[in-house]
Image (cartoon, rainbow, N blue to C red; front, side, top):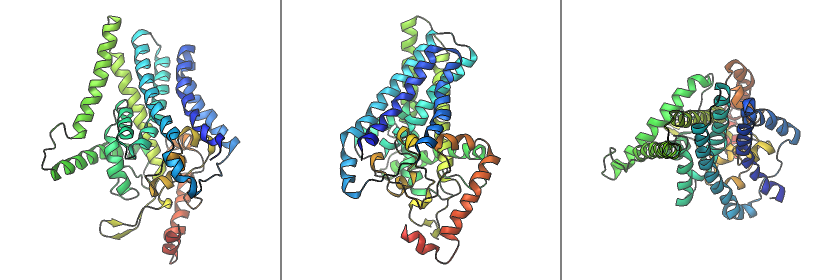
Length: 370
């Protein structure tokens, strides 16, 4: 890996800086984060182009184990908690117009969801307890701690099947997908915890159920922050918990938008009742723009992540044979909000994918060669 690429992952820390800058400039500048992420970033993607590099197998062990790559994710966790508490402090102390309030909460949600949950997702796959703790620590700030349970033990098992609430289906708009994935993932996580505790002979209605403890931890966090700000300023502000829950809603909605585009319409073949072929790089939509991949810790190399979930972001590879999104995530999540445009852009690509990998007698040989 070149030094330029190695240090490119630091650019993610510019996004919270834009949120802070926009807030202190005031007014419409609160939308600075949105403008840069969804306006400037796509332009930079087109200008810089795709990332042609893939790690060679000989350097994968060092990329997996190098502390520098872990340190960046650890550092983000503390940046995120600091950003959230700072934002709540400012909401407590400053009067904002409705437009400023909306722009500010949108800026924070883009940080905590667009980058924060991406980092939590990366850390949640690792076996080290400290990395799992950091993952949950980040998810606490967006009211989505159950993601740690469902994503690892549910989504990665059932991805690209009808059993997975986080895999969108052909012809399913984001607005139909959204309640299915939000509520379906929550109840799936509850069932997974219930099953785990049942095997240990324990009741699901205890603090050993991570679904219960996660909810209590999140409520305790915002309760302590609200109480602390009330004592510090001498006044209670209902806007503090309101802002916290709204930015959480924006953050996990952004996550579900990403889920929607990552697996839209892709289906693994059922080889026996309830048993599906193994997850391959062809079962996730991929994108390889260099700039947005640096911001998102290679999240857009999603095909390799699902085929090899243990790989650290620094070692993920791009596969040309994977189905390719035409634009980076920042553009595609906006397109997904306009279903007719989404179908026009994506459905013919999905049909080409089906014909290539499942449409003829040689398709199984093609899949096995991937």
